[in-house]
Amino acid sequence: MNPSEIFRLFLLVGLFSGSALAQGEPEQAADLLLTNGRIYTSNPVHPWVKAVAIRGDKIMATGSEEEVAKFTATRTQVIDLGGRMAMPGIIDSHSHFLDGSLSLDQLHLDDAYTVAEIQQRVRAYATAHPAERDPWLLGRGWLYDAFKPSGLPSKHILDEIVPDRPVALECYDGHSVWVNSPALALAGITRDTPDPKQGEVVIGTIVRDASSREPTGVLKEEAVSLVRRVIPEPSHDEKLRALRGGLKEANSHGVTSVVNASGSLAEMELYDELRQRGELTVRMYTSLMLEPELAEKTLQTYEEARRRFHDAWVRAGVIKAFMDGVVESHTAAMLEPYADDPGLTGSLNYTPEQFRDLVVELDRRHFQIMTHAIGDRGVRAALDAYQAAEKAHPALRDDRRFRIEHIETVSPADIPRFGRLRVIAGMQPYHCYPEPNLLNVWARNAGPARLPYAFAWHDLAAAGTRLAFGSDWPVVSLDPFIGLQNAVTRQDALGQPPGGWVGKQKVTLEQALAAYTRDAAYAEFAESHTGALEPGKLADVIVLSQDLFRINPLQISKTRVQLTIVGGKIAYRAGL
Image (tube, rainbow, N blue to C red; front, side):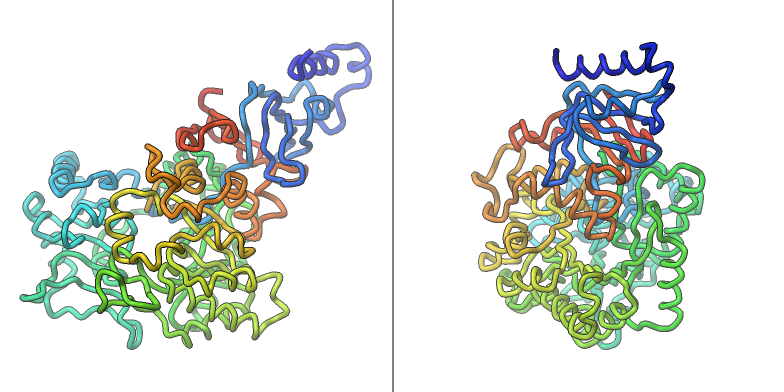
């Protein structure tokens, strides 16, 4: 008799035998039982079980089918997994969830590789979305590699096809926006408009023609805000409608929790409104943005968010800083010049002293800090500030959980500092998928000397660093299995290059899963109630179409989620 047959026999005995009827229902009956599965718990001490019993929003028990059968009652819903793999819900440790949700209905260019293809898509989208309905044409995802040899587009490409209304297209990395002439005019951007500054530090660039000094139509970093401020804000109802679509998208990919790496008090209120309506199906830990000066009003906003939102569904308490930009546009801060342009090193958005003082003060107030740092100089500046905070407040060592996000380049001298300072590496595996934009633009700009430490997951983990993986949605897909595959292969869909791009920085499947589950939970102070399938923790469980441990790693991205359970309730179901 196989385990499934034994389990069904236990059910029959429990439900229909005279002795069971005499004794009544189990005192602690499960509401939902998952059985006959290969269930990965993400607990390294006890990684596999056959069945899970759920009561309310928590896991009652895990173990063999026989061990969980005693929690069965007439009201228990039983789902036979048919031998499928199940695991904890995915924690996306770096998302821009509201932006991603709003982008679902916008123009997408992330797989358009030529100017002609981009123009065709813009033209088709403009036809399908007339100006009466959409006064602005909005989209995202264009790739630098599509615009050879300069790597940047111009307003003229858009003016040819949409001359009569403003167009704003965000680059795939979110750090540049491409606009047409009507958009520049509405924003009041001319040859005389200065690049934005923060104090004496230039924090954004209006790209200009070398001879005429006229704006070309590309805005980098904080210069993007010059256009964003004139784009009509979506209404409250439009945001809620978009978020409902985003929640469905997340649950369909097995995402049950996210860390929002940009946000506001108003955004948290949207999540709370959905929660009160019973519609929130993803747990939200949302950051507030670091201001250049910690004015009393700013600190009051930080404190208000933490006071109001602090449960397992909607939480505040993390502050997000932008230390630098990105490699592709030469705005990431480098210790040495860019390989393709020796005159550029990028720049920091704060002076090291200014950032240190901000971090030390926020640390004193017990806020977590996550810092976007892509260039090796940006990473070092963040580590220096974190080290200063540890020196100032040594008693907080076990509670602070500082994070650095992206870390696309890092000096080998700084890698051991992550482990010593207990700094969490928030990284996004799909960002180094070996496609033309990475190979032809990123690698060219960074240069061969930096390549051995590009997206250095392995070396950081070997130095004792906890990895917390995410998507950076909408920069790339919300689907975690695409990122998971790249984490363990660093190869394209055809298995190229052999051994993987900078293959020494690959991680194992177990390491990658930990970075999407238990270590991701630790990175957001949630390890006591999520990130692993253990009794007493929240019942966030997903069931997969294939067993990740029994397939070729190059097939991982083909995984589909067949069941998503969040807090004991089914949020998504397909094919099971």
